[in-house]
Image (cartoon, rainbow, N blue to C red; front, side, top):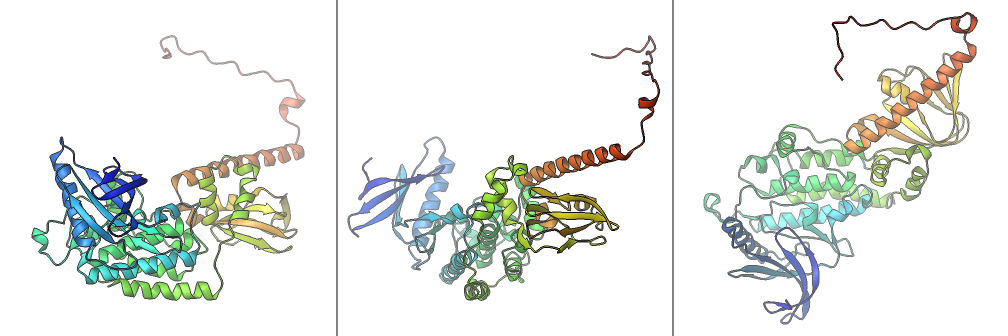
Length: 451
């Protein structure tokens, strides 16, 4: 088709499970607009009825909202066989593009985006609107990092009677971003959107969701019962103050959560000011990633796993003759030696010397007790410090990959130890006297082995 109603199609922008989005020319406004179109299914009356309800909601609700960080809706039409909405065209991508561990934005940009979203949601609530489906895919970003909240199709109009509200559709939304009260089907207010925005902030900072599960029942249990992990553990570049902000945004108790978007934004502004005043603009991860990628023992790691390892660990430069750890310490870390060399000793005796591209402290880490050895740098060295607590919160893929690496290194250590014991050991009995192999004992005739 060449047109959608009065709108001339320029090109397709994207498509989802039920809708297509086109870039179109608006002949009345003389500007490009994005037009979302859905066709109703003849064979599924229930789905079509639901889609009509969503489109009417989005058209009715969104046209009441006039805010620089909310996508403007110009027109909404519901026909017999289809419905379409003409809205502001945002030239850019959704925040979802930057919620991957290998594409995270710098801290000050993330906080600036979420800050503006807080104010937009606060404005929407003042108009009596709760979005109910805040997630990265529904936050569009223009070239200047200005967020535009889109897709008010699931919005709840608080100015209507909840019991007769035609816009309230149970079972809709994105479960990973739902608040505890939304999961339970309780009455909603602005705090449910702030909770979802807290989940988005967590994901934008770490590349991961705070609550993950293989099925929806387990996910719901975690949302209702588990505490959110600390983001500063999962990404050491994140200031600890953000732990408290996210914790408050994700409080299960409504009375302890942020009461409005302005309060949430105020706390974020203090963190962003410190980041900008301290010139903490970019995280220098690209060259570090390249160094990890070239390390032989990490060749089996996928790029996404290396990025996750890098984001959740701490890169350190250590001078010569520095004690990395000593006997009796209890810290829960181990290290990848990027460059340089270290001496490992026990009770004043040298155990071995390690060079670049090796693990340090992994034996004590796996023992989960106090350190049995002391490690001192022999020259200026670089390390990737891996926090065991952060690793336990990482993806299953990274944990499995690290477990294999640790096991392979432990086997190599044992192999080296056996060879040293062999070199210093006494001659074996088999080497000094003749021996014979032990003859196998025949099984009783009444016993048989299954093939």
